[in-house]
Length: 273
Length: 283
Ligand SMILES: Nc1ncnc2c1ncn2[C@@H]1O[C@H](COP(=O)(O)OP(=O)(O)O)[C@@H](O)[C@H]1O
Ligand SMILES: [Mg+2]
Image (tube, rainbow over the protein chains, first blue to last red):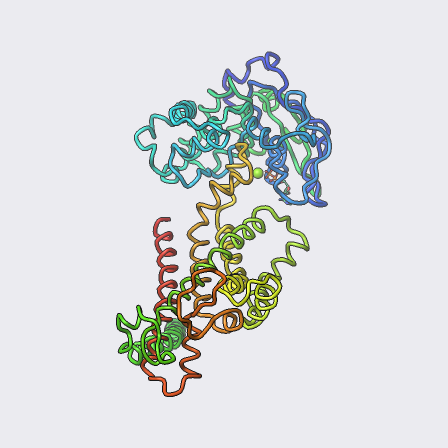
């Protein structure tokens, strides 16, 4: 059976132009006594989109949350190994976690705009980080909404509640909210799983446009989506009693057309066949 | 067919019983209100509300008791609201889920079940004597605040917990601190619930007789309290005294005091319900 992966040309851009943005070395994570990540090692390039794929429950979200320390919010979590952002260990006790999360923003599976106006949603982060001037805030709001390809749709209803927007618009609002604090890395945890196909394509386009300026890591269980948007891909798995195994990591095109590991091949063909 | 109609009968029966149960709970409340209005309505004149009592409460009005009760409610609110809300915030947003937190939660739940006279005794030995506040508005407010605290903390916690976790995550994920998240996202969302709880708590405090009896309420005072360290009159205590200890007391006057107390308490309950309904409609 032939697989039409429809890998876009951009995916073949040489990754070696990029530097290593995030580096994970032998990272393990435990929820209490349950090990959810097993000695993961990988390097995430800047100016690229990295996809994390794998069956549900294999630890994709956990791996993603490792990068902005969102796992810290769960009690009983223990992290071993090393995670570096620009060569600096982010689990070091000297690290200011809020500062880290400003640099490594996150978009969630279910769009979660705040119960306030569109403008206030986007201005929220900058305001909390000390921007007070209304004019400056308005500029940030407009710029971020434009970056998130939402401006044209909401410019006449900036005062309306963010909750009144459609699901796809809400998710782009959440992306604008992240962009407003000028992060370097954007984490996306199945950002399209609650959206219809048209809204999904809009977000994918948006991601491709953002890829030039931001390091993007996306978790997805949608193989086609990973193939369409990502430059590099990580395939994770869980075995009967073991979650959090990184099976294969490499350029997306290679992972999909010429996987090195039998388990990757089985998963990909299984999903497509 | 048989099963269908028998199911219908079951449903009818259940419905009848539920309606009956509702009626049974509502009727006594309505009866008490109507009975109080009928018995005490005649006493409710403008003079009754704005005059000082005379002849041991048999004549004149109940102004100092009304004012005293409002002072008490205000005092209770001033102490119970900030402490209760801060404790609620700490317990929901900061405290780790460990044995200490669970012990504290258990203590709060049990605090609500402590008989009010015990709070009174506590207030007497701590605020009146140990802190040297004497028999006073301050000691009574603090005593009632201790009792109201359980309710304020519990309702604050519920209101805070009802704010979706997703909002907190969205905020933390863009580098906003925990406190800023609480202050700018969680608290505004939880505010109506918190206010509702506080209003109910002080309306309950307004009706308390036993605790204030031993920490500073007086039957007849020549003047309104001018400082928090003064003694005070209060509606429930006044009602207790005129109904139990004043001979030849006109029944209408007694019911008049009861009616005023009922109006004060119920109007705060209605205020709480209004806040709840209004915020539910907004959502
Ligand atoms: N808060 C938690 N406490 C305990 N176990 C968890 C928690 N979150 C996730 N897990 C477990 O960790 C594993 C990985 O979860 P997750 O990273 O959410 O997987 P994925 O995103 O790939 O579906 C799952 O087996 C899940 O049950
Ligand atoms: Mg997940």
